[in-house]
Amino acid sequence: MSTCEIIPVKLKAVYAYLIKGEKNAIIDCGIPGSCDTILKAMSDNGIKNDTLSLIIITHGHSDHMGSASDLRKATGAKTMVHSLDSAVIKTGKNPPLHPTNPKGKIFGKFMSETVGGFAPYEPEIIIDGDMDLDDYGLSGKIIMTPGHTPGSYAVILNDGSAFVGDALMGGMISQGKPGLPIYADDVAMAYDSIKRIISLAPKIIYPGHGGPFTLDEVKQSFNNL
Image (tube, rainbow, N blue to C red; front, side, top):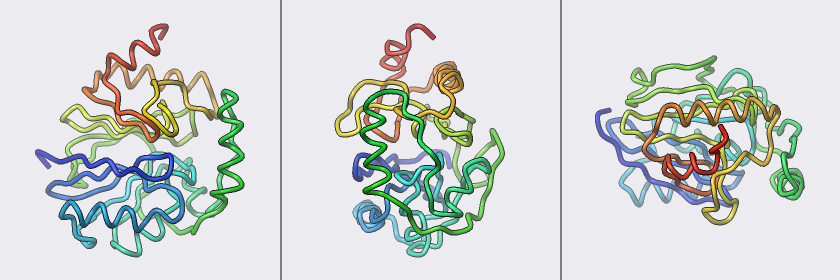
């Protein structure tokens, strides 16, 4: 895919990102019940259901994979997830959350009480680390960004767009400022992953919550890295 169009899809407190091009893909897909909103966004942008080829899940939390089962049924697209987070989509149950700040404790209650479980299934594509995406019709690569979860990864397109999931976060409701994710299994690794994203100098950074951000905005928020 030489060129593509990026279509942010605003869901409940989270973004999904449609990648429209020679082959069509989506990065993350929101909490359970988000499928209809995604399908409408696809239709509004001239993407037919059966042309979605890939559902890319940046990490194993229900607000990013909760509608994956419904979306796969509606489109026939294959799902990509990292092996270290694959148990979540296979069981439909969130792993334990480890807040990094008070906001994380508040939203953790939302995640457990409001989102709850989701429809599990066996994903078709299990990855284990950095990889090129050319074989999937995307001009870009996956880089590992662990810390938020063990199997977190980012999608870096050749046009300079970076889709980082929750490796770093903005506001849950508004754009906010770039910051550490409100949950992290390993805070030191989370900082290392942010440092890695910065080192690749993407032009624009699309997090799962808030944003998008320029590289300078992210650098300013993490000027001690």
